[in-house]
Length: 173
Image 1 (cartoon, rainbow, N blue to C red):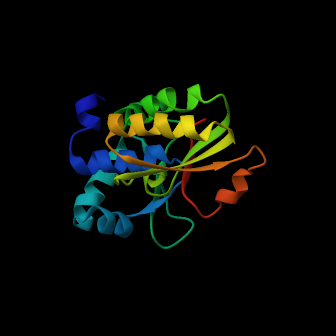
Image 2: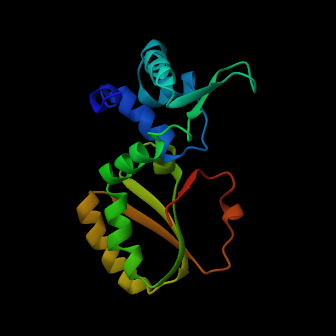
């Protein structure tokens, strides 16, 4: 398996991004067709290729429709996921912003980006005791680096991850 095999084609990159950024998510062919704005056959071909490479798994037991999800046990799962995170600038966002804030318990990406959908807004949940004015200055800088608007909700350390039920999320820290 070579990198050009994996990252050849926009639809394949979108699929990998969607599935690797949020490995708990399950996707359907028709939903992907609608989200990507391409034919179901185009999506099906790419899903089959990724399935043949064992990067994604197919589950037909839950519903009549096939569900696809990331194969987190694949040896390339973590390297590819880290590559995608770096590509979108989240690694630099974490380093530049949250590691300098002091008492940060956890950081989550939520909503569209957690589902692998690229939008102009990155929604974050930050848990901990942070200096909000300093955080806002750092976020302003990070927005210039990643060329996206960052929206942040800050919670104290009593925040429970169960409050995110029903909201797509990826835990970064």
